[in-house]
Image (tube, rainbow, N blue to C red):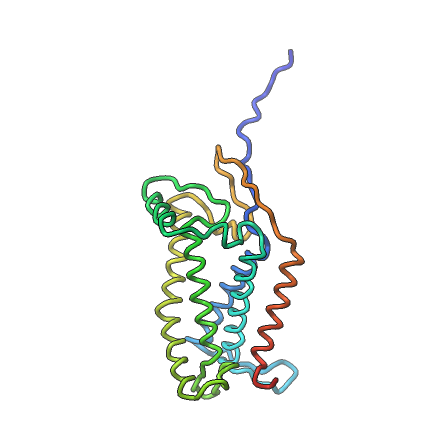
Amino acid sequence: MADTQDSGPSAPLMVKVWDIWVRLFHWFLVAFIALSYLTGEIGGLDFTVPGTDRFISNMNVHVLSGITILGLVTFRIIWGFAGSTTARFRNFLNGPSVILGYAKSILKGPVAFFAGHNPAGGAVVMIILAALFVQGGSGLFSQDDSFFATKGPLAFLVTDETSKEVTGFHKQWWEYAIVTLIVLHIVANLFYWLIKKQDLIVAMFTGHRRLPDGESEPKLSFAKTGLGLAIAVGVAVLMWLIMNAEAL
């Protein structure tokens, strides 16, 4: 009789949870928020377009970065209705009792596995999207009084006084709302990684998560890449129209 050999423990099952569009949205958002911070708080990114005499001021870059963030958020809102299972709002939005119950469970032991956003994370996602939409929207009507004065693409629709008031709100909203949400988001992900042993960060790069032992593989559907591309192009055209509204 032939000897049987123990093949050892099987490799953990990795399941796809995030489509390419959610991942691109997330990391592009990180990059452009960082760019907006650099241009809005630090500066020094003025440059002349190579091969031309066109000068791009630091605040010109800030406006372009802001409109890109607004476009990304707009795309994500649409994708929340038309995208893959884990991207759809209806699959991760819950009532206050569910969110509170999940928050309490975090303190008691191992947390339940969710292929996409958990109840608390889903609520935070919606808050972040809303906060960034307000930030980007207010930026459209703001103005900068630096040496190279710059106005938002829709500032021409309001009075100079109103534009300055909106600018003040735009700056305070960043300092008190956006920065707070960024810090909480980072801390929450580190908490899950270091304390709860759920690596949510790597999954946003690879699109895959390890399925816990005893957990059945989730039944997920993923939207076609072409649909995301079509939505992205449509949003890009909308943002271009906003950028050039005064000249149209």
